[in-house]
Image 1 (cartoon, rainbow, N blue to C red):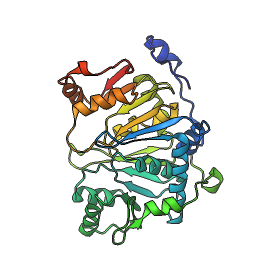
Image 2: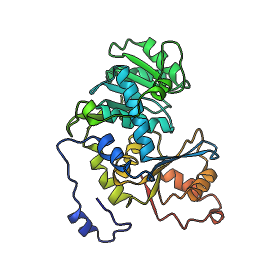
Image 3: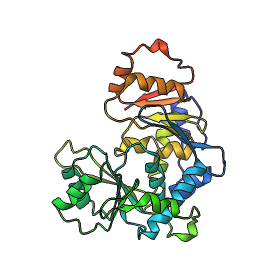
Image 4: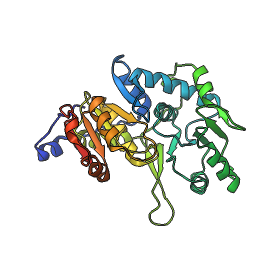
Length: 316
């Protein structure tokens, strides 16, 4: 599906916009692996917290890494329909794990890293979680949550960056797994199958689970095409923690179109000066941030940067 860089006729766009939903759809195979056919096509540009180190990942890289992750998960007994609680920050592993689960048909339950043990305990129990994936920085909170209340559905605890106690070193298992994976190896996914569960923020009493089905990424073609006005030549930066739904709003439709994601592994307090530097240094063409971010950005000396590559900004 092609989207114009800038559409000016809203009624025409509204009338002509269509999303074709097939009977069977798998985001990993139908989107990521399809784009991987172009070996040069960038999917992700990642920058560390300090803004110094950067890495580039093509769709081919994401396809290969997700295949390895999916094969490692399969070897550990993860299957279609299992609920996988993933609590990781803005790190490359989060993206390949997400795609791996989608290929398997496992149901991803993203979680913000700021959750406390009692928040995690509530989500593990209410969500009937089967697998937890996190890192060493956060695994202690999960262990405390499990001690607070039994989670009979929980079968596996995986770390992406090592091992600790009864946690499995998933990073090593992934690196040793085969990069080859085909649809025929797995149970197929229909558009109506469970795909993703987010918890609401809990502003009205307890957080509530919101289930999305496998056609969910196609719905975000509206987000990427009509709100972000993207084409497959764009590089988009959406400010969001990986545990919140806004992260999905800045991923599924964008990758379906073939745009590249820019990710800053920001930690701690928001740094407006660094954000402006990264925004104008790394070829970002579309930016989306909350109003608070814009209010902080305009307090900086905006004359210090060249914005000629930035063509579209949105807020939510």
